[in-house]
Image 1 (tube, helix red, strand yellow):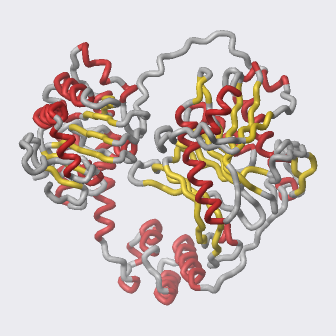
Image 2: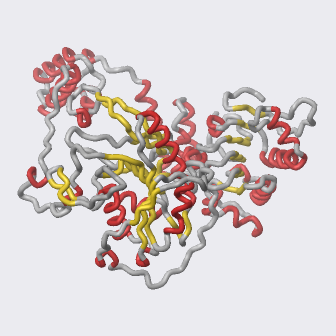
Length: 581
C-alpha cells in the first residue's frame, strides 16, 4: 500500500513527483487513489502516461524475425522499427512486406529506417553549406531585413571584451548589476590568464543622470564604462535603449557582404563587436537582452545562474561543416540555466557556423545568482561618453503619468532564509510564527514560503498573513535565492521549489518524512516535526549552543552539540551523504 496521495499535489507538481517512481504496482495504486479522490482528468492522464512510459521501458527490443507485420498497424510498425539496428533484418522485413500486404506506407517506413541505419555507418561526408544571402536564396520575396544591413553577421570579425548592461531603477543601480560585474571580473581575470591576453570588462550605463554610478561600477569590476545620458531616457523604452546599446556595441558600423561599410573611429577599442555580453534577467533586462541580441544577429541564453568560459568539442555538422567530424571551439561561454521542466540544469552554448559568426555570446542572469563583490574604491577605469545622435522617432511613446507599485519583499540579498511549506498545515499561524522566531535570531534573515502556501486554502491570523503572499514565494514561479543558509521546514522538495533555492550555500531541511525529496539535495536533513524542531533551534541560537556546534563541525551547520555541551534535543539528522550525525 503506497503512502503517496496525488491529492497533495497540484497538476504542475504531480509530474515531477512521480517521475522517479518505478514500481508499476505503486503507480497503479496512485492512479486508483486519484480516481477515488479528486479524479482530475489532467492528473489521471499524467499518471497513465507514467505507467505507459514505465511499461515501455521494461519491454525487450523486438525480434525482427518474429514480427507479424500483417497483424500490425503502420504506426505500430514505425515504432517497432526504431529498435531494429541490423540492415539485414530490415531488408528481410521489407521483402516480407512486399510478398505479403505490400503496403506503400509500411515499405517507405522500412526503407527510411534502412537508409537511417546505413547512414550512421557511412564515412564522414562534407555538409553542403549554402552561404548565399536570404535575398539571393529567395529573389521572389520582399525581405523586411534588406535595409538593415548591420543585421547580417560578420565573417572574420574581431571580437573582444565582456560587456555588462548595468540597469538602474528609480535612479539607483540594482544589485544584480553589481553581481554581474563581479562575475564578469572573475571570468575575465581567469580568461586573460588562460589565453595570455588583456581583454576587459565594459560596463554600459544608459539613462538620465546615470553618470553618478560610474565610480561605483568601476569599483565593482569594470575597466571601461560607456555612458549615454539624455533626459528622454529617464524611463526604460524599448526602441531607444535597443538602438543605443547596439550602436555602442558595433561602434555605429553597418555591414554588407561581410565588410564594414561605415563606422566611427573609436580609439578605445579595436574590434567589431563584444565577445560576450551580460544582461540582468529583470523585466526590463529580459526585454532589452532579446532585442539587442536579435539586432546584433546573435543568440541569447536567458535566465542563467552559472557562467564559465572554456573550450568545447562539438560534432554537430551544422557547426563543423563535416558530418562525423569533431571540432574544438575556443573561448566558449557556457551558460547554465534551469531547464523548462525543472528536473535539471542545461548548459547553453552560442557557437559559430562555418560561414557565420554568432557574437556577442549573450546571457541574461537571474538576480541573486552571484555574490555582490566588495567594491575597490582604488580601482581606475576609462569613461567613454556615447554621443551619437538620437532619432526623434525612437521617442514616439511618452509616459505622461504613472503610479509606482509596491515592489514587495526582495529575498535575494539576505544571508539567511527560513522557508516553510505545507508541513505547517496542522497549525498554519503557529508555523509562520516559529519561522519568524528563528529568522529573528540572525542579523540578516527573512521568511519565505512555497507555492503550496500561496495557493493553498490555509487560514492564517491577520498578524502573519503578510508573510504568506506571493511576493515571498520561492521557486520556479517565484523568487530565486542563494543565501548562505537556507532552512526548509515542512517542504517536500518539489522540483519547482528546488529551482528557486538550489544555489544556496548550505541547505538544512526539517521534515517528518525520511524519504522526502528535499533530502536528496540538502546538506543536512533533520527528521522531525517542525513544530518541535524549530523552537529548539531558536533556543539553541539564543543560548549560543548553535554557534558552538557549528564551530565543532568545522564551520558547517551542525545537528548535534559538541562534546560537553547540553543536547538541545533537535533530533536525528543526516548530512548530504545520508550518514547519521
